[in-house]
Image 1 (cartoon, rainbow, N blue to C red):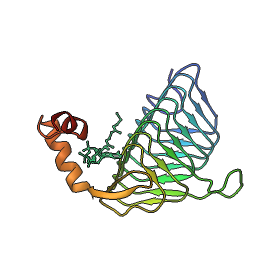
Image 2 (cartoon, rainbow, N blue to C red):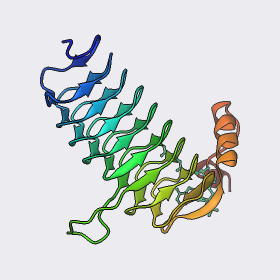
Image 3 (cartoon, protein in one colour):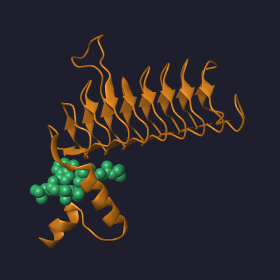
Amino acid sequence: MDRIRPGVRIEADAHVHPSVVLGPEAYVGHGAVISEGCRIGERTKVWHYANVLHHCDVGADSMVGAYVQLDPEVVIGRRVRIQPHTIVSTANVGDDAYIGPHVIIANMPYPPGKRFVRAIIEEGVIIAMSAILLPGVRIGKRAVIGAGAVVTKDVPAEALVFGNPARVHSTRQDYDRRQAEWEKGIGSTAAEKSRRA
Ligand SMILES: CC(C)(COP(=O)(O)OP(=O)(O)OC[C@H]1O[C@@H](n2cnc3c(N)ncnc32)[C@H](O)[C@@H]1OP(=O)(O)O)[C@@H](O)C(=O)NCCC(=O)NCCS
């Protein structure tokens, strides 16, 4: 069904507050909830059972995966992909970021409490699956956070970090080179190297 702007599609069992502004060709999947005062950019997809709490702003051409939670006043840039089951508490996420599945971006340093702090994820950052960002960290432009990392401190731009606590192991340039090689069928992951050892 079309609603609000041309080409918008909202599944019949989704709940979109009447105050929500949906850009042209936005999509809201089955069971998704979008609360008061949110703005969803053009062509952005909010997949099934996502829960977007009040006054979030999601830019154009982005993707909010199934079962994702965006806490109140989260700001998401353009062309951002957020994979399923991720929780984004108070945070700003820059353009072109990729956030993998089961990531937690936290906002409360000493729970239970009332004082929250905002994480800043700059442009082009990659956060791999199941990483945990402790409240208020700043992830510099194009940094890479490895799978399962526990990020306790700010991460410099262009760094690749992993581990608990996360430490710098490499660079984004190295990651990009290895990704390009991998896509061409050359290069190998740590798992593959272990089989040859
Ligand atoms: C960052 C990443 C790409 C590095 O993987 P990789 O290229 O296979 O790893 P490397 O070959 O550089 O590994 C070097 C060393 O670090 C270790 N290591 C690699 N990734 C690690 C991680 N996330 N946490 C802890 N240690 C890690 C390896 O075991 C290896 O250890 P060794 O020196 O004792 O042999 C990978 O950890 C990652 O996060 N991938 C993204 C997966 C993902 O989220 N996909 C999307 C959802 S499907």
